[in-house]
Amino acid sequence: MKPDKNIRILISGGGTGGHIFPAVSIADEIKRRNPEAEILFVGALGRMEMERVPEAGYKIVGLPISGFQRKLTMKNIKVIFDIVRSLNRSKKIIRDFKPHVAIGVGGYASGPVIRTAGKKGIPVLLQEQNNYAGVTNKLLAGFASKICVAYPGMEKFFPDGRIVETGNPVRNLQFSDDKRREGKKHFGLRDDLPVILVIGGSLGARTVNEAILRHLPAFLAENVQVIWQTGKLYIKEMEKRSGKPSELIRIQPFISDMELAYNAADLVISRAGAISISELCLAGKPALLIPSPNVAEDHQTKNAMALVNLNAAVMLKDSEAEKELGSCALGLLQDKEKCLQLSKNILELAKPKASEAIVDEVYKLINQAE
Image: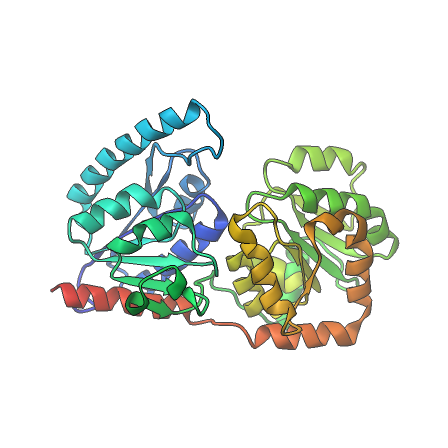
């Protein structure tokens, strides 16, 4: 099948921005090559993909599915029933849509639909963002023809012959002096004062928010401006506890235009999720990483240390953040030479063509299936 022919691509997964943004980036690249391509997303009802995907201009259908509770609880009985319902719904989705390829980006929503597609002989491509594979992708690996990964050494999780190292697809981000000025204007910030961008993940992070709250007075005393993404779960609490708003602080539940936020920033404080790190590499910004301890195999610390060992970022343990974040962040802002070195080194790790590489693999699967 030639790229200019009509194709139907099903993309499934979600739960967090770390799954959703790569999925949208892949879809955008497919549409760039073939505006007539039909793309259908499948997500989990009630999760953020049901809002973010339509905002990006794509159709999505939801499955009544959630993850298992780690402890013994009656709620897991409902999860089992929901999985059965989701498998039945997936059969209908695939029967009606007839995709040429099914793409799974991780998150439990991808489980039923990718499993169903694989059993029906539809070519499956998985995209794994982290250096420690997620549970869903590990379970689905047997159905996959190709598995696109961001880190070397992933054969410990997946069949070696199916792995392609592409890097992580991220949002299309552009950086320039004009964009920097536009970013500061967009957020209503002064051009002559430094800016810290705080992103605790798409859903927010309690530790990061508490640490920022504690050290806001120190930032204000040094005339440092802060763009603070709290996550929607924490926005009302953080607004209330931060007291009288300052003209130097911009508190938002979620930042839709990350391109302008990255451009405006002189320093980024972030969790160490795979997609956040991939975007930071493209941005070339000095980064202070606070890995979440609440992830499988502590993979965010592994993500962060991969940069720290190359002098491409600074890491602060989650347990140390509330006490030390202020002095660490202000110390970095004042050390211009260190910031320049961090920017140079992290920029060298960027893989801006990841989406293109993944879509190349999608088209190979389509052509092989003809």
